[in-house]
Image (cartoon, rainbow, N blue to C red; front, side):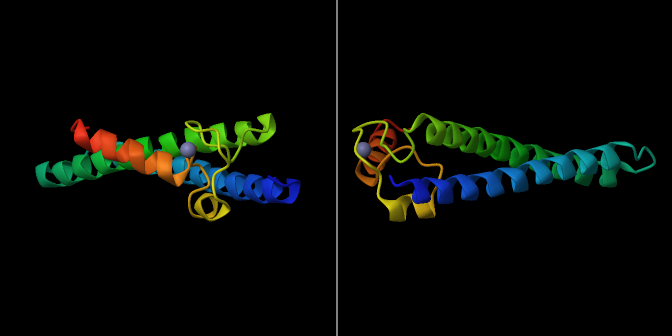
Length: 121
Ligand SMILES: [Zn+2]
């Protein structure tokens, strides 16, 4: 991949990372607000727990994404970004544009998905 393309993806990934980290900070703040309210009745509490569960679910998805973005940035540094982990062929630019954290080309990815489906993953 050309340097200007790598720079483009590095920029894209860094922006996304900053956004996610900012959002993660806000989520922690919301959780602190919610748990500091001891006056709430049972219904409120149930609603609160429900939304905290959602927050945790979203957060774990976010932290997985943060991890993937960090790995992609590392791959850019290592010079392995945009190379499929399975077949070691370059991943199509269009695919990277749509999903910059991907580490598989489209054919390896669909093969993996078909396999995961077959074994009931
Ligand atoms: Zn591949």
